[in-house]
Length: 425
Image 1 (tube, rainbow, N blue to C red):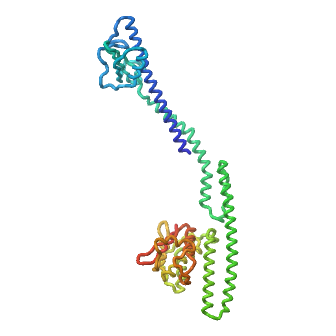
Image 2 (cartoon, rainbow, N blue to C red):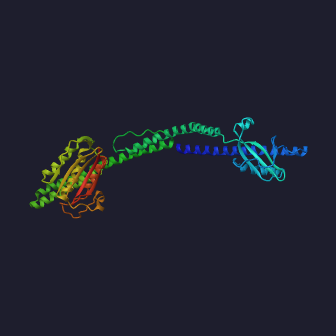
Image 3 (cartoon, helix red, strand yellow):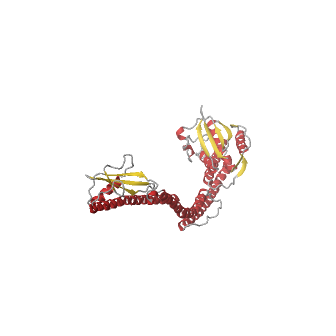
C-alpha cells in the first residue's frame, strides 16, 4: 500500500511538472511572438503615417537589406510559425521568417538580462528588405524543477509517512496471526490471540481462535477414541495369548504366538502414527550417539549383523522414545531386506545425519518416494519374515518431520540402500 501511494504521488507530481512545463513553454512563446508582432505593427504604422523609412541602425524595429541572423544561432521554428500566423491575421505580408537565440550584452534590458539570452526575429518583406527586432526569451527555469522536487518531498512526508504508520499498525496483528498459525501445535496450551486492529482483522483473529479450539477439541476426542480402540483390541489379543497355551502342538502354538505379536506390533504402529500429531512425550536433551548405540545393542542381542561406528557425544533436543523408534524402524528394514545394517552418525555445522545402510536389493528409483506412503509395500508376499503392513517408513518419516528434519532414501553403488535421517542442530 505504501509503495502504491508513493508511485501514485510520483505520477501526480510528474503530471503536474509536465503541465507546468507546457504552460511555461506556451507563455514563453506568447511572450516572444506577441511582443514582436506588436512592435513590428507599431513600427510599420509609424513608417506609413510619417513617410520616413525605418532606420537600419537604431530603434526597436529596424529595416536592413539582408537577413541579420547568422547561420550558427539556435533556431526556434515554433516562434516563426506563431509569428506568421499572427501577422497573417493582421494582414501584414511576410516572406521568410527567421529566428535565432543570441547571448545578450550586459547593458541590455533588465528583464532579459535574467536569462542572459534574447530572441532575434527577422521578417522578410518582399521588395523592402528585412524587419528585425529583439524579444525576451527565458531559458528553462531550474527553480521550477527544484520547487516541484521540494513539493514532492513535502507530500511524501505529510502523506506517505502517516500512511506507512497506519499500515504498520494494521499489519502488526496480521503478522501476529501469521506467526501463531505457523507455530500452531495442537495441545500446546497457547493462549488465544488478542483481538486487535480493524474490524475485519479482529474478525479473522476471532475465527482463528475459534478454529484452534475446535481443532484441539477434535484431537482430544481422537486421542480418547484411539485409547479406547487400543484397549478394546489389546484385551482380546491378551486373552488369545493366554488361550494358546492350551494348544498341545508346539509348532502351532509358536505360529499363533508370532501372529499375535505381529498384530500387537501392527496395532502399536497404527496408534503411534495416528497419535503423532500430539505426542505425549516432551522434548528433552539427549545424547544422540548413546541413543543410537542402545538401539544397535538391542539388535546385536538378537544376533543381527548391525554395525555402528563410534561417534562422539552429541547433545540434541528431541523426543527420545520416538526418535529411538524411527531409528529402530530403519535398522529393522535393513536387517529384514539386507541381512544387516551399517549405522553412522555424521554431525555437521548445521545438521546431523544418521545413515542406515544395507546390502539388500535396493528400491527402484521411481519408487523411492512412494515407499513413505502408509500401507505401501514393494514386497507383496505375506511371508512373516519379509512382511508387515508398510507403516515402518511412514512412521519413521512422521517422527523425524515432527522433529524438524526429514528422511531420504538412496540406492548404494554395488547394491543396497542408504536411509538418511537429517536433523537440524
